[in-house]
Structure formats: C-alpha cells, structure tokens
Image (cartoon, rainbow, N blue to C red; front, side, top):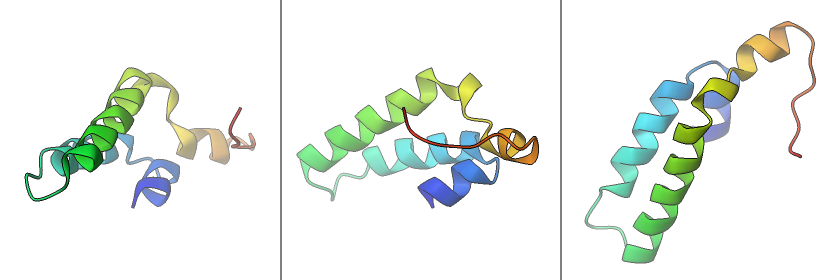
Length: 64
C-alpha cells in the first residue's frame, strides 16, 4: 500500500492510513511509535511526495 500509493499519487491517503495504523491499540507500542515516526516524516514532506507527477514528467524516483 505504501509504495504503490505514493507512486500513484495517493500521498494524502497514505499519510492518513499511516496515522490510522499508528493509532491501533492492538499493535505493540514500538510498532505504533515507528508508524507514527513514518507518518510524521511523510506529513512533513507532503509537498515533495508527488511521485506520480514526477514519473509522468520522466524524472527518476530514487532514495537519496
């Protein structure tokens, strides 16, 4: 969900999904903490995660 969602232009949905997961009480605390960190990262960079547009324009997508 995460990668495919980001690459297909559903960044906002992915951010909401991560928040939802981080709030699941049945998950171990360490897992919820890590999900919250991942959510916070993408939320801070929401203006930079328009990968669908970048791919459509021919730009490569890669990690730093």
